[in-house]
Image (cartoon, rainbow, N blue to C red; front, side, top):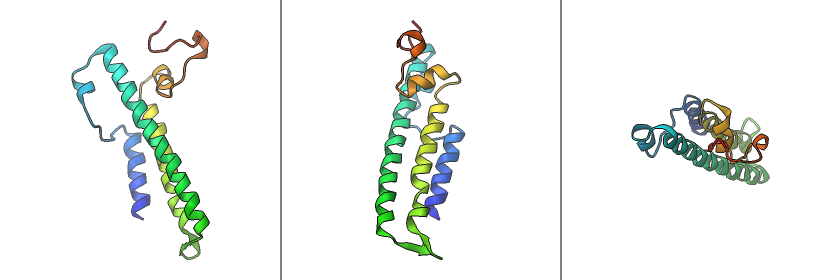
Length: 126
């Protein structure tokens, strides 16, 4: 139960953009383009960590699935634990969606280049 509530709380916090941050320096001291770059970088790292945790949680659930343990009323343990990869995936997606109000920085946050502009960096705008 704690697992489900914890992941639900994390997903809700990510939806509202209220996840804890290690530093607020970028929000308080930086301005303009540098603030945008710092936000994209921070959100990209956060989304990447959440993505790696999603993959690790999925591997964990697969390992638990092969164990075949039953929790209660015939419900396998892995069914409840599947909340972990789903929750981390939701958090990663919501972090990327909160990177910016426009799609350009969101795409940069995913580590992609825009095919429409010859693969040049969207942040540079060239």
